[in-house]
Image 1 (cartoon, rainbow, N blue to C red):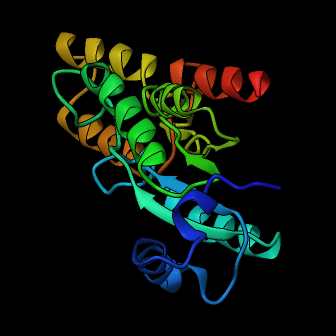
Image 2: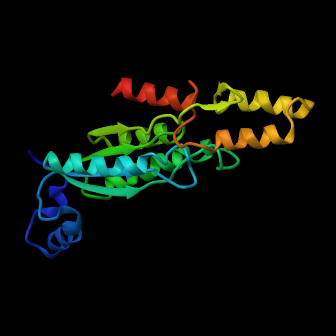
Image 3: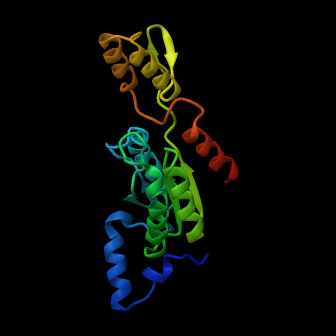
Length: 205
């Protein structure tokens, strides 16, 4: 089978030699399809933090299948800290993924993405580059329990903020809520856009 990476790695000239030498640390002596692992894990994005642990498992799977895993970082789009909105950067992520694929000897790619803007941005970029693609998401954070009741990350926060504004939730309760909401990693634990995008992307693959 003709691999896309052969355009970089086959031949006896100085360019092919330099390309093989550059890939040697990742290849570890193997010669097979080069599979990119686009990892959007970031300490600035709790939604995508579980992907850090998944990246190693993905790399092992690629090696066991006879491929060469090549992990690289991507922009991590999270609504929690990114202002004014992560949506402004979705197309930038798509361009980044597409151009990383086009400019490197990748025969396929695994997208590690979770939050509601990272998933579509990464998929858009891979679709434009038109190489075999697998999407791996990190899943939702465990539901928090506040005063005996399970709460989600979005709607319940807004409801409790209303209680705070009206004086029905005191300072101690507000601090307790903060500890509950900050106790885990993963995407919003409601059927919001992160879960919806992950479901749609997996079903369409």
